[in-house]
Image (cartoon, rainbow, N blue to C red; front, top):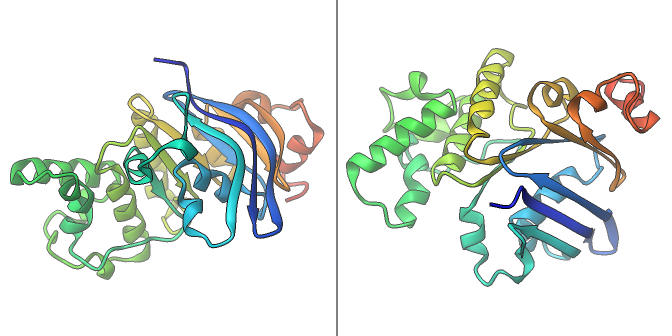
Amino acid sequence: MPKTHIEFRNVSAFYGSKQVLKNVSFEIPRNTVFGIIGPANSGKTTLLKTINRTLDFIGGARFDGEVLIEGESVAAMKNPNELRRRIGMVFPLPVGLPMTIYENVVYAPRRRGITNKAELDEIVERCLRQAVLWDEVKDRLEMLGTRLSGGQQQRLTLARALSLSPEILCLDEFSIAIDPVTTMRIEDVLKELRKTMTIVLVTNLVQQARRLADNVLFLWRGEIVELSPTPVVFSEKPKDQRTYDYVNGIFG
């Protein structure tokens, strides 16, 4: 398998006439946690949306350049739904489906044609454990997922994203509604998951990027300020002074 899993080549993104990504080029290695940091409105979420083409759902939005997965352009893929099955996506706020906890997790596997009850049960337990939610809900799987607390619903969203064992997992501020102790437990799970998938992590918590990421991209005003191994980004001498200032809270 190629070492590079995702590649951006001269990618610019627009919402109407407003440009939010400016000619970014970089590679994401396979089976790593790739951290993306930067102030608000830097284009971090937009960057994630180009990977699985959810930018297609936004009127007037588009991107130029190429995003490639295993060398194949996502824009050229004829079946974007198949692309999205390969990529789990978790956004900052929970997106619970109006159905039971159990059905939330098995929704995508059922659509893929999995009907065996034992197999579906295994998927539910595995994904809820990975999302650090199993112990809290294992006795009430038939309860509506929307009745869970905000933090629990966010973890249910994570479980649903993992239900098809994606090759890429994109996390956009996944811990915003989750308490610090549970967040740390999920971070431990993510460290294990990178053995089987590539994780792209957008976070405003720079210390979370420091704990989790193998490499960190610092995005500012739609442009790459720095892309370096995590120890370099958080050292006293990153490649760009703005990186030092941002991760040390001097601006941002």
